[in-house]
Length: 112
Length: 113
Image (cartoon, rainbow over all chains, first blue to last red):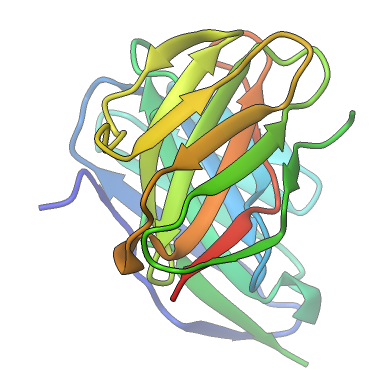
């Protein structure tokens, strides 16, 4: 079983809808949680970075971390066709900074 | 610079040849990480540096892979005697102090033929 589980999708939503993405994990040592967006043949682009449990909002993006359930989420409001990409969750423990465990990535398609 | 710069973007090597990839971290970032992305999304950690010192090398296939981060030079990842299975996109990332945001470069696509 992988340390980080993420549904690969594809997840298809109409323009303007809320996109809901999530990851589950098994390692309780994870403290740092990140969401990246990756377009085809490009590098991962950092969207959200969260430490420990709680919510964080940045523009159209909201990240939630529930360490008690080992579950993290990313919500994208007012989705646009330009949001069509693969979304990756990544996480790390304090002692293993930089050795991120990535989810498999969820492909999101926002249709006009 | 304001972004992680990786060169070259594409690299083609015959099996058995050497491949060398470069990464210039964001100015002021002291941590550098290398990842290998195989298949569509599977990221494999290779090695991390804190300045010029190896921080964690548990992901490195040591028999053919080596990496360096020297002062005032781009970091490098070198693969001796490449194999077909080394074909992948290699990403470099950097962060300021430990446990802060990590930013990735655009990757080097290595094709071994």
